[in-house]
Amino acid sequence: MASTTREQATNLPTASSDGAHPAKSVLKEAVDAVLNSFAKHTHGYGRVDVIEALQEFWQMKESRGTPMKGGSDNLYEPEASEKPPYVCFVSLPGGSCFGSFQPCPTKAEAKRSAAKIALMNSVFNEHPSRKITDEFVESAVKEAESTEAQVALKRRTLNLSTDSSKDPSTGIGAFRFMLESNKGKSMLEFQDLMTIFQLLHWNGSLKAMRDRNCSRQEVLEHYSDRTIDDEMRSQMALDWISREQEQQGLIKRELDKASKELEQCRLSGRELRFPKEKRDILMLAWSQIGKV
Image 1 (cartoon, rainbow, N blue to C red):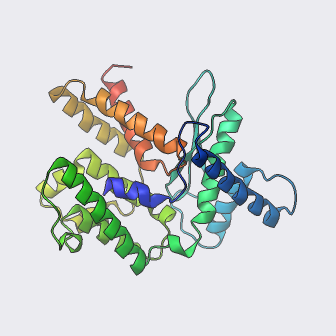
Image 2: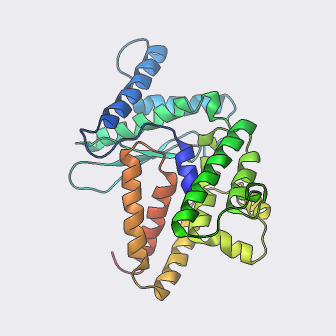
């Protein structure tokens, strides 16, 4: 479920960290095209302030009745660094997160780069194809089944049964159940809840709940109104600290893996909420065991 949703969250061209890679220029051209179009229809001339435009976009959505748990403000998080290239992340009201995807010589440019990719995705997210419909559910579940089958083949584990997507007790079944429970929403509006379940799956919490005979529906109902906050991160960090006591070096290995994944996704212009939350939770756990 985790790997599937990262790919479902955004369908952008990918770019490598290598500046010569043609996909890099394709991504930049796509972003600039959206910005030029946005500028033409909002100001009529000149260069648009992407940070201002992104804020106005989500304020407009809120004014038109889109429910937002924490309001329409965008949250910018610059990475701590004493020298370039600088990195900045921006979290949108729906829960999705994007990061600067270009080498940025200044902190201000890193913030603008993050706002660019976030604005592009926000505009693209308004397309009808991004709405969760019956057709979207079937397509997403089919892709999830394909991904899970590939993982099972690599690990030489049991293959999925033909009815697994209809069974809420399985990962694919829970994914279907969540999508069907959120029909009418867009993928960015659905991201916060989706990331919560990705984290619960990654952290082993879903398995622990299942061992306590909690159904997927009960878990979904419990978390449907939750947001990812410091309390949730702290609890998951404690879980990793507990595992560290049994497997020395586990947190450092997982942190290195999560940091690499986040970097690759950021440079590719992908949605980042799940890999960023993983890294932040592991960094919290790492700091609490006195290794920083």
